Image (cartoon, rainbow, N blue to C red):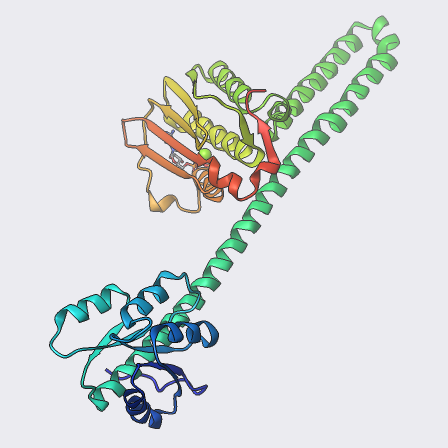
Length: 380
Ligand SMILES: Nc1ncnc2c1ncn2[C@@H]1O[C@H](COP(=O)(O)OP(=O)(O)OP(=O)(O)O)[C@@H](O)[C@H]1O
Ligand SMILES: [Mg+2]
């Protein structure tokens, strides 16, 4: 095996042994390698030096006064260090138990005494190489975690902006376009009433135009409701889901039921919106694709989590069909929303066996992230 040469900025190695002669001997063996060598006379001093200088490698003799090598090694490893310090233990010859104890204490490697200079140089080089790799891995992991957190934050912002935009559009459609149509209808009726009163044909035409305006108003109300039902803010999730199921039953003939269990108290707004969108998508999918006779929605509340089940007895489907990736956004959008809340989404479906979608959103984790600022009372 070949290892990279030690870092050009001179790796730091702490040599810990209570005997000055031994430290001196090790120093002489390692000196030609160009390391920065620091000496410690016991485990306690070695740990203090580790705190101060974050070395690249710690060499520990096992038997020492004040604090022995095993204890120093366990203490070093019991701390949650941001940096990684490999430990090379010096163990007594032919004593297997010391080797085992060394590894149990968290040592990375051991070397038997009396020390063979060539072996020591080789093991130190190898451990410094591994130490570099481990440091690089930790740094990469940190960067990856930071990027992941940034993406999550961004996704949350995008979803919030998306919801806000839907609210704005719904309001504009309802208030501005709806009001303009009402004014148009009233003006039309007012200005045309004289003409229509004396002419049957004009009266009929006016009736048709007014009917079209009524139809347009109804369509706009429906679109505004679909974008964001005002009742989600006013009534809360449960009533809105109940209304959705009633509407679905009316428009499709599918028998829909809602079952609640547990005691709903506070639902964070983000959780409420995400669950609403997921249930909406699951119900829409059931209506569009399943051919089911029955759909049931179950919502269970506990202090720790909210569990939602949407079940239909329709034709079912193969849920991990890779061909559909990218073409169908509904299930993917559900997964993304639930991921952002640290929850889980499970789809159980098979041809001919209906579909069961289970969503679990943990509330504790959400609150510990500070989501409680945006909390709604569920049972409004
Ligand atoms: N309840 C269901 N019963 C049967 N098939 C379903 C059900 N839900 C989803 N599917 C199948 O899974 C596919 C993917 O669903 P998804 O919601 O992701 O996309 P979509 O509904 O086709 O389109 P959209 O992007 O508009 O939601 C559907 O096309 C359908 O074949
Ligand atoms: Mg869909």
